Length: 213
Image 1: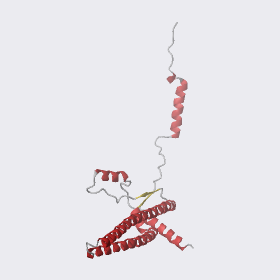
Image 2 (image 1 turned 120 degrees about the vertical axis):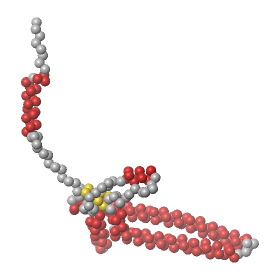
Image 3 (image 1 turned 30 degrees about the vertical axis):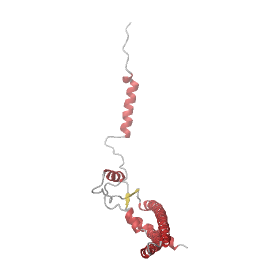
Image 4 (image 1 turned 90 degrees about the vertical axis):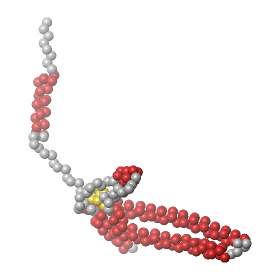
């Protein structure tokens, strides 16, 4: 009995038809030399946050309020300093054998010194919280304004411009590595700075808010 060789499925008429049909379909779908549509360029805007914060009227007004409070608290500390100096002057002229009076003045001086130190620490905590609140509020307003600016001017992406941040000349490995890792913008062409447009928008919005009853 003669056994005829088995025909490979890869050369069966069905498979050949599928291959030819696939090539035909592919040829119809992607003809030779056809080009896909070029992607639309991304419009990017950069914002220099240092320049922005320096020019924001809202930040200036809040800073003035904080500065006024800081001066008031500094004046209170200065009053304590004056009292301490007065006690030091008295201690210089009081006889050393007048133990009772010297002890009383030294106790007052110690109390004033402790009070000043405690108040100074409390004041710094208050200032730190106030500045933190200022930065938080302004940052939220900047975020909202960036979204509005992006919609108005057609930006697909708005980034913080950190090109001004450079490596220190004599920085250690930790300092240099930290700056490199946090760096975002390596290079950028001119004409994409959105700082002034954003600054104008935010100052106009702030002025309009002040006029509201």
